[in-house]
Length: 551
Image 1 (cartoon, rainbow, N blue to C red):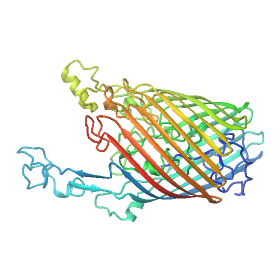
Image 2: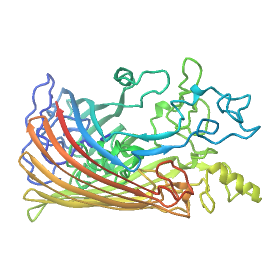
Image 3: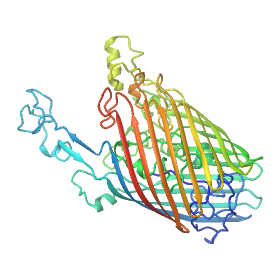
């Protein structure tokens, strides 16, 4: 879903509830150019990030500035609905029948258990037809292109000032989660689906700030790229967030869209617990530092997350294993034998500088950030450490490698540069963003010996009163499937265009079109199989009509 929160200029024009008694805050003065203020859109709602907590100095904006000895409490939200048409290469296909079923291959005598009782080759371990029908049956599969989407978010915050002038506060962002409908015994009706929707915490942080020394933010919140970019140089000009996880991108089948490697307002950039420092702005320049020990929240480290029946549902590790003791997949892992343990990032650190100002009547936003990290050591079987051909074959099987792959289970440290620029004059904004270095996917580590990421994004938009129209396009290459290390790399392309209109304060409607393409030789983009020459490219496109109400 959308990671878009703030987009630089006043394109939403929404009203927020703010103040110690929810009094309406005064609107910010008009911003003459894009990117000259690091704050929410003028008159816009209060998100987790607002005009009090997103920079060293408090700025006029939708949330009232606290005065000495006071605290401003604000409760805001948004509801967004879309009608979409989405088409991809994975919309229809034919599923093969399992061996032992009618239409499937005959299991030879003594074959493996699991065939339907009474079919040729069935064994004593055979299961019933109910275990296959509705789950693994063969035949044609097709999905409809149309859907109606809706989601809700809640933003809670407090901004205070001590009598000595110290500013401080906290913010929370809650989102609506979505999960697939159950296919066993449960009804496929709407009631059963809605009961699986949950609310979860996306951001939660505290801060302390002073105009003369800067601001420190600690918790689950944005890093330097998200703060510096703010959706401007990555051209997130529609409420959907455009190429940053919008509905047209995220709701396509089989992940048919590129991930947001440009990282402005990207979930993997802001969702781990971190500490961030931003300096005061001097002559248009400010700089920042950020540090995160790992990619998780420390409160989940020791939890085994046992269900009432004793089974482990995981502790955010992605392995289903609890971390009451050292385990493969633990968030604080420094070494492990799991097939993905080597890809776990440690000590994520960022340094960056930004410029915001007006040069010759042209508004300028420009920034550069360097990110680096360590990584957990992989201690499992590796082809490079095997001493016999049989050992090499066993390690390749464990890792899932096709013939010729150079993947060893080892990864390189994160080391990337990311930067963007946006120039604004007379309502027009043009610019772009670049990223390059050792990374694979959205802040994933690149496998040793594999390709790094090289990407470019360009965009333009025009704002005239309540109207915004624009286009953004991206292209980048990276390793992609790690099992194809040394064999192939992944190419990603996308273009998105749309127009939005502010109907009334707090209400915006928009229309959008998106085209996406992902290609990697030797990878079946529909089944995920490696070493395959089928379906190496997957494409998608879609149309969307949306409406968002911020309050």
